[in-house]
Image (cartoon, rainbow, N blue to C red; front, side, top):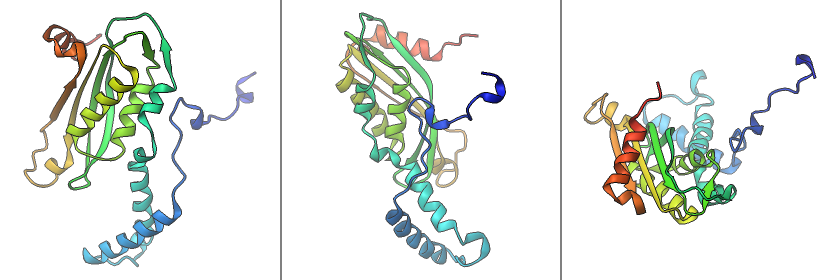
Length: 212
């Protein structure tokens, strides 16, 4: 097949990352109606040209940003579990995190670093970032997000231990309130072998190490 014969790129063929462009029409209409009222309450005119479609756009945006409610993170892991006699630490670091704070519905974003020690089963590496997304794409607090990721991997994969560290910037701190633009919040959660200082320190060393 020459270059001109190649089929067009299909983003839906990427492992697990299907473009979300299907929306619940009833929910879009209900949310959009409320946002029309919100714009009025803010002193805006929802009928002006720049805002005519804003309520609908916001409604669709919120459905996308919270589509994790429709995903079963444990099923993501179960879909790619394999028997393997590997018992050393598996680390996936620098996983991008994007979520909405449930207190102000403003974004927080950063990186997650996750490790587990297999006990007879490993999981496809792409599934770990998908689990992160499934929980992050909900209204969240960073502390709960950290624990939910840990518990899902621990309960589903049943490894010897799980470690999760998340580092995020919160726009509710940067744009309002204390307005500290450079602050970063770090949360961590561990199970099993990672409760041991030596194992935990190895994990922390690996997620801070550079391959350069």
